[in-house]
Length: 276
Ligand SMILES: NC(=O)c1ccc[n+]([C@@H]2O[C@H](COP(=O)([O-])OP(=O)(O)OC[C@H]3O[C@@H](n4cnc5c(N)ncnc54)[C@H](OP(=O)(O)O)[C@@H]3O)[C@@H](O)[C@H]2O)c1
Image 1 (cartoon, protein in one colour):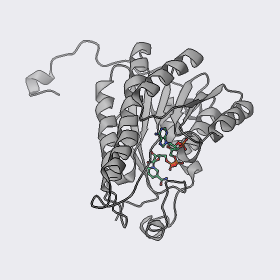
Image 2 (tube, protein in one colour):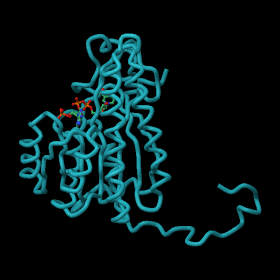
Image 3 (cartoon, helix red, strand yellow):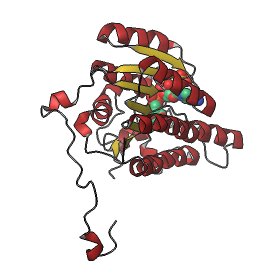
Image 4 (cartoon, helix red, strand yellow):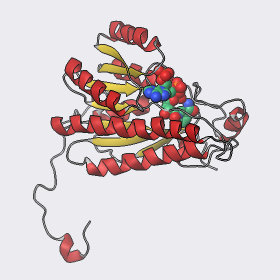
């Protein structure tokens, strides 16, 4: 940042940087042939839809899962259908050593990581006065710790490679105090990862892009529960939750050359929920 007009006239070495050598055709920009993508929470829900989007665009995919072994079969199906390499890795993202060693295994098996989607998350939605401290610590360990560990160890790979792309799944609940269920801890964890991602976009400016996706309610296991679902239909301008196939294009955009000038962005995709 220039502090005054005189300071602003000083030419900085290496600026402006060259435009990247990306295709002119916009549909070509969305293709990911030969790229390697990793998605956490990839067995189901938003994560699986993202893994599918990456494979459909031609990327090889590492599907990270925690407890849902369906990831193994789904990885095999993706490989068969799209002619790409896929491997399912079992890893608890709240375990920093497991994240570090699994990151190394991915590099060993795929040779590199171009795109890392830190998507795994969980919620124990309760008011703070009813939330136990272990419940608070659990949410913090997965939603914050998990994203921090994935970013730290993926970032080391990106810096070594001189390139990389991190996408973090946050939530509209990092922007608004969602109603009617009080869930201050979940909301706080998502606000953390949103600002963390923006901060990394600057820190990693020499070698990687970082962007955030903030979904509203999507029809998954973490979507609107019985207490929230009617409010979700009322608040979303589109009058419904999102289907996971409606979020694939956004992740693909952020993962691909189509977004080569996009970093530090936080895209809300919520059917208009946060408008009022
Ligand atoms: N659906 C929504 O309305 C909504 C709205 C805003 C934000 N989000 C965010 O979107 C992301 C994906 O959620 P989703 O809606 O797709 O629900 P989901 O299907 O329940 O996905 C959550 C994923 O997180 C994984 N996970 C949980 N704890 C983990 C741990 N300790 N280590 C590794 N993985 C772990 C789960 O893996 P396993 O099943 O293998 O254990 C699961 O695949 C989450 O970050 C969530 O907060 C969702």
